[in-house]
Amino acid sequence: MPEQRTGKTASSILFKLLESIGMQGMSFLVSVFLARLLTPDDYGVVGMLTVFIAFSQVLVQSGLNTALIQKKEADECDLSSAFWFSAGVAAVLYVLLFLLAPTICGMMGRPEIAPVLRVLALLLFAGALTSVQGAVVARRMLFRRMMPCNLCATVLSGIVGIAMAASGFGYWALVGQQLTNQFTLAVLLLIFVRWRPRAMFSLRRVATMMRYGWKLLLSSILETGYVNLRSLVTGLKYNEDQLAFFNRGRQFPEMLVSAVNGSVQSVMLPVLSEQQDDPVRVKQIMRRGVRITGFVVLPMMAGLATVAAPVVTLIFGEKWLPCVPFLQICCMDFAFYPIISGNTQALNAVGRSDVVLRQELVKKLYGVAIVLISLFCFDTPLAIAWGTVLASLLNALVSAAPGKRLLGYSLMEQLRDLAPMALCALLMVVPVWLLGQLPLRPILLLPLQGISGAAVYLCLSLIMKNDCLPYLLRSIKRMLRRG
View 1: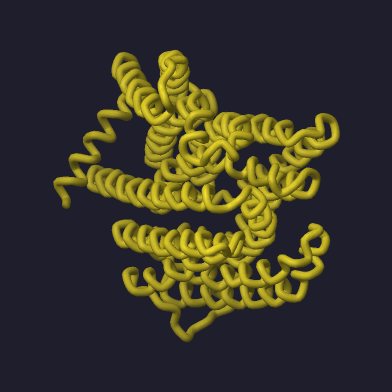
View 2: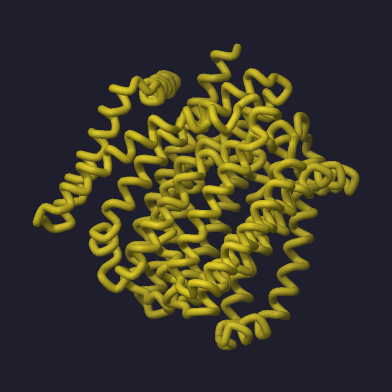
C-alpha cells in the first residue's frame, strides 16, 4: 500500500508539473506578445491595482481552501458552505471596492483608472468558486482534469489580451486577459471536475473550518500585505515604470519556481494531510518534496540569473532592459523557496497552523523593517529588491526552525539535503557564463548556454550520486505505464 501511494503521489506531482509547465509556458508566450504591444506604464497601472485585488482575494478564500484539503472528512455540506461563505465575502468586498475606487485611484494620482479597479474586482467572484474547486481537485487527486482546464483558460485569455492590446486598448488588455482567464477556468472546472455548489449552508461547519483556517487567513493576509507592500511602495515612491520593471524582473523566476514548487507542494499538502498521524511517513514525504523541488529550482535560478540580459533583450526587447538587475536579484530570492514552502505546507498538513501564524508574525515584523530600511536608508528600487533576498534568507531559517521538534526534519538535515544541489548549480554557472562571452547573437547563444548548463548540472549530479534524477525518471516511467 505505501508503494502504491508513493506511485500515485509521484504521478500526481508529474501531472501537476506538466500542467504548470504548460500553463506557465502559455502565459509566458502571451506575456511576450503583450510586453511588445504595451508599455511599462500600462503594466505599472494594472500592477498597482492588482495589489488591492490580491488582498481581497485572500479575504474571499478566508483560509477555507486549505482547511477543506486538510480536513480528514469533508462532505457536500462542507464544500457548499465554504463556497457560499466565500461568495458572500466576495460580494461585500466588491461593493466596498466599487464605492472606494475613486478615492483609492485618486490617492495614487490616477483618478481616471477608477473604472479599471471596479472591473478588476469582478475577479473576486470567480475566485470564490475556483477556491473550493481547487480543494476538490486536491482532495480527490484529480490533477489530470485540472490540466486541460488551466491550459484552455490560459490560451483563451491570451488570445483576448493580445487582440485587445493590438487594437489599442492599452492597460484594458491586461484587465480583459485576467477576467477571461479566471471566469473561463471556473466554468471549465464546473464541467470537468463535476462539483457544483448545492443549496445548503451550515454556519457551524464554516465555524469549524474557520477554527483551523483563521490562522491561515491571518498568515495569508500578512504574506499578501507584505509582498504587495513592496509593489505599492515602489509604485507610489517612484513611478509606474519602476514598478513594471520590478514586476517584470520578478516574473521570470516566479514563473519557473511556481511551475515546480507549486506543483510539488499542491500535491504534498493532501498527501501529508492523509499521513499526518504517521511522523515517519510525514518526514519521508516532506524530505522527498524538498529535495525534488531543490533539485529543479536551484539550477534554474542560477542559470537564469547568468543569462538574464540576453534573455530580456531577445524576448521582450531593449525597452525592458532596466528589469535585468531586478531579475537577477529575484533569482536569489526564489532560491530559498524550497525550504520555505516545504516546511509551511508540512506544518499546515499536520494541523499546526498556529505555528505557521506565529512564524508569519515574526517574518512580517522583520520583513516590514527591511522594506522601511531599504526605502529610507538607501532610497532606490534596487535596495527594495535586495531586501527581499535578505528577508527570504531569514524566512527559510524561521520556517525550518521547528522542523526537528514537529516534523522530525531539522534545519541542518534540510541544508545537507540541498547542499549538493546548490554546489552543482554554482559550478554549472561557470561554463554558462564563459559561453556568454562568445560573440554570438542571443538567439544562437541562449540555446547553447541552456543545453550546456543542463548537461553539466546533470553530469555533476550523477557524479555526486544524487538520487533525485533516478527517482524522477522512475516516476515518469511509472506514469507512462499507467497511461
